[in-house]
Image (cartoon, rainbow, N blue to C red):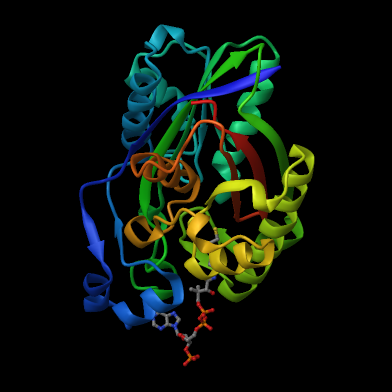
Length: 307
Ligand code: COA
């Protein structure tokens, strides 16, 4: 049973907010944010629906498909526009899709969980699935709180997955969740994101490394075989620490957080698109996709690009 990833699309708001701009209203600096996180600027605006719709339309065009081809829409989002309805049906309506549509919330591991969900949906008879990660995190940021304001941002990314009986791009998955760590990173109803940054940092490195090792083992390859690592974009130091522990040089990791900040469910497809735009995605290459987030949740997958 195989899954081909046949199209990708992204969307980010036009509005760029630099570290210097944040420093005008917060007790922070470009130097602190850059050194501690790697983030230089981020995009702010739109909504989960508007950004997700645009990314979804672009992924569909990239795959050369029309709306009637899609059997299911899975939207990964931590920041749905409303508690009810889910945002996925609104995106489906805006795109002109008539298929089932649902949200998946696994925080910053959301896109990976959505890929896994789509894989299962393809195994039960669906032929073509649109997976979108879309976030409007800025809506849930207290812009007077420098701890979170420097990190979170808005954006969306999407992928089209197609059933192929003859082969697969998705070689392995390792997913996990540990609800005992739920209070480390939260956003209450009507509240804002809050985080124990140091503890999230420590656990993030640990779960990325362990899930990556499991996914590599299940795929029957080693870290040396990887051409690319496409990690969730939370903090450059987390990416550096995890790749170092896995024995992977940073030159093989894709980093876009300098331009987009932490866009949660959108960060992995945004990173993929950047890698492809820069000619780093080649047929036959192995890549590790890995994410972690509030929950805590985590997920790694090994992919072998067929196109
Ligand atoms: N600007 C300037 N100074 C800041 C600051 C900011 N935005 N935020 C914190 N500081 C200060 C602290 O008050 C502290 O000052 P002190 O030494 O006088 O007490 C100092 O900088 C160091 O703070 P600390 O919290 O130890 O920094 P850190 O190196 O742990 O970095 C994070 C903070 C949040 C960037 C880091 O912990 C992190 O990235 N954690 C994981 C975040 C993450 O991945 N979240 C998303 C999961 S999906």
